[in-house]
Image (cartoon, rainbow, N blue to C red; front, side, top):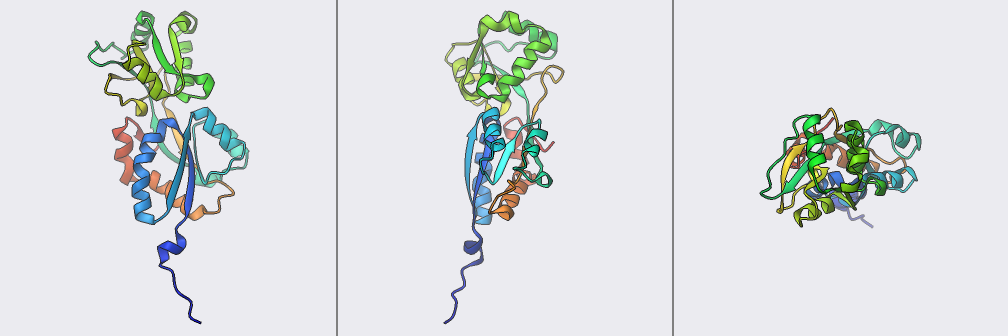
Length: 243
């Protein structure tokens, strides 16, 4: 009997699972359709907080392509990712937004940022205690500025970056902060990224899982996520591609 040959791409089409923090969600969701069109593979993506998704990866949940934030050493130490597949995807800063049409404060220096924050009635940002990396980063900024205690009564911590900006748009805060890649609400204006001296941009790095059954397809997805072809998608969301 003659064997029927399947078309190449059908035979090799894989379903690739990916997990990533919310800070890179919009970029990845824009990139996936093009990757699927080019390769015939399917991508099933899961997104959550930076801390939450990292915990899932470190506890051994199997996602073919885990995307995590530094520090990377603890992730590698778990043995769940292949160190050789480490692929920097993009870097994203924490940025400031105000309600649409409101005066934009000066945030060009640490001193100016301190002045802006101390003058604010209410500052909304994603809750670091619930795993939001932008929230953890902003709390570090408050410590560097020496105003962590003074700001406590004015801080409005919410679940997720998009929420922190929605709260601002509704008028429940007068300053909103989260990753620049998460700020695209018609009710707000972006002021800009916090100065680097007080806020280190967060890197997002992809790996292939050690136990991936579709490692080749997973590698192909990772390299597409880091390719020059998609760099403009990251830039359009205020991210810097690569390292």
